[in-house]
Image (cartoon, rainbow, N blue to C red):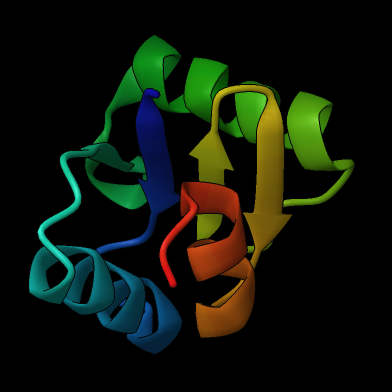
Length: 82
């Protein structure tokens, strides 16, 4: 199960999400959209907009499921953690 996080380097909720994932030893890929440059940044913003309809962060994605924001209970549910 592939876990991906779209984040902003300065976002408090993004930092909390990364910390939570690390504490729960979840293997994930992450991109800090605000640190990307030029066309890459535009592409990432469009990916987030296409997925969520907005540009709010963090976007936590597991397979085809996703959620926006920090929601520990939903993360656990999506990852099958009890």
